[in-house]
Length: 75
Image 1 (cartoon, rainbow, N blue to C red):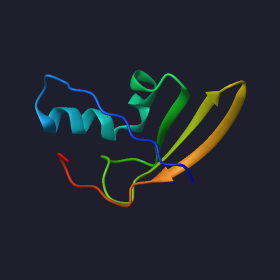
Image 2 (image 1 turned 30 degrees about the horizontal axis):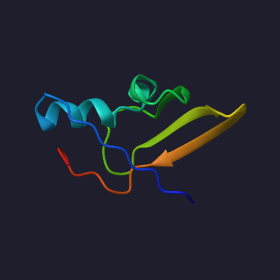
Image 3 (image 1 turned 60 degrees about the vertical axis):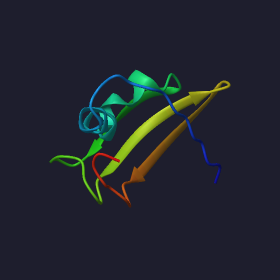
Image 4 (image 1 turned 90 degrees about the vertical axis):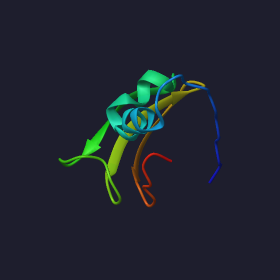
């Protein structure tokens, strides 16, 4: 499985940035390839939270699910 890493400097407190990035429904705001995404189930994001999404890249569409296996706010 490929590893993708990105970085950007955001002039906001780390906790605020973490809370935004941890919500699956926000993925399309900062990842142009994500066309839809959301959380599986209810409750706040945390260890074990699962998410789903659809990515479109180079004419191909991929549906995926993921699970938080590490969750250390605000890191």
